[in-house]
Length: 225
Image (tube, rainbow, N blue to C red; front, side, top):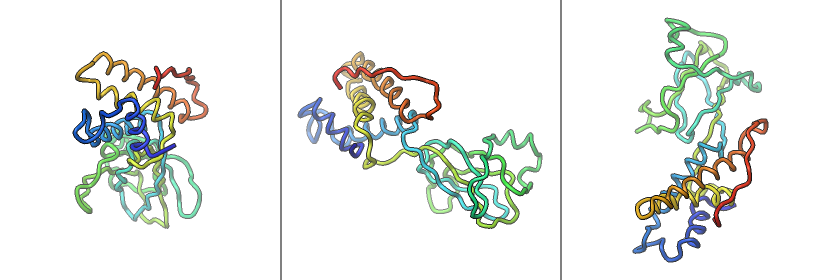
């Protein structure tokens, strides 16, 4: 296991000796950007980096900011006071809330039962308290809270220094980058590497998916990668 950018780049340099770096075929910054793009794709496809974050609730508050680290929200749990979690909130849309209650913005309850995302996860605010980043609606909110929270569970993207298993680099990230590097001069080779990437993601997802997932994954033949 090694840092995703450093580890994957080292593998690519062995496959493309003398072609990555300043004044060479592919600049270091370009290759590193491709590695990160592939890493974010793998994180989302394979649930590679699950994470949770507690959001402390406030009196009469319906909408809360979400950290930009999430690229996918998988569930939201209710955590009242100092107790353990007590069930999941159900995901709905704003249209669903309109159908359930014409005055849902004014409704209050003893615990939130539903949540709705106001935008795609992972959008940062442009400035402090701008309110234009990723946000979540909980319904029905509480009039008075006592250290009550919701626990947001999801997938995060990580950073260039995030440690990643060697086989994830070999099976997924190396062919992803090679596919983009070959795209202009050899589209057929690029398509082949992208197929290897897709197959690699299937293999990796089999390791990181839910243990009761009935899908099976066959052995990977990585064409020398």
